[in-house]
Length: 385
Image 1: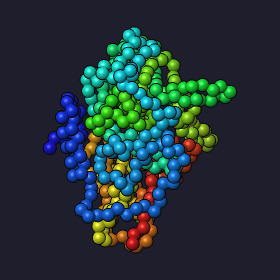
Image 2: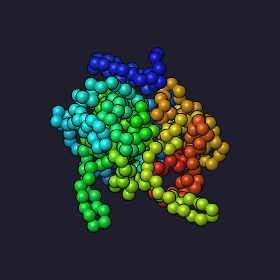
Image 3: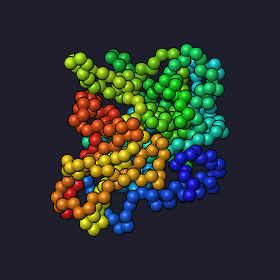
């Protein structure tokens, strides 16, 4: 069987798309580390009720994780302002600012350009930052056209250093005594925007982007937290100064204490690239044998280790049958005949460069005073009968 996870696909025609989607479904069912007639043992610690069911929708239920690709109808979505309804027939996107040749593209114009795919696990940087928000993550196959050639065609002027992505969604923002309507907007440096992996994306898992996930067009920036992957795009603008909007400089900012020469220094950094992380997804039981299954993402993963009840770290088995550079890895650990009673299950991921997912008492986490970039080790509780 061809290794679709290690190369891009150029697909034309609805019949081909349907065939590919069916093949992925079969591969997912085959590859995921499941055992016939096993049952899921529910976690004792469940997320609390969300106070914002409109803004945060369709969180991943970890116990339901059973495929490498997250189906569109189970993919989480977040809105910071309104959720716009967009007519693709009248929609267009502008590329302007410090460019020599401003562009205006319809959806048909975008789709007529070279098509590229990437499998990318998107995680909200606030995931696991609140008791009610533990499922802000999903893995999908995104398709669109590369961003870099469009910026090259527009001709970025020499003094252009920043690329700002504006969404159609708007909301009222209060700054001191001033209230204003602002579009959702995020930015990245020109060098980051020119990364060949970045897509102007119109397709998700072989279908048009769902409205909740950015229809008709969104940015997909593999390796970045979800906030950078702007949905409902309407304008791309090149500027000669750093962009300091609500969601770049005042919110989605990580505040942390650091030690310098024996003194405490406070730092503030805008949320950007994803950090290494893993989480136990579920415990399954077949007879007296149990299995822990989970996922790891955010960096090139070398291995995952699991700890039961503060015991020694044990190596998990990574499923290599389905993987991609920017996608989560599914792992499992067989847990034979555990003692009856309540147990804790913790996982940690280790990158190919030796970076270890930090424990909750690590200064990187313990001295962080905001819930963003919550990549500390995740511990779950389960009861064995």
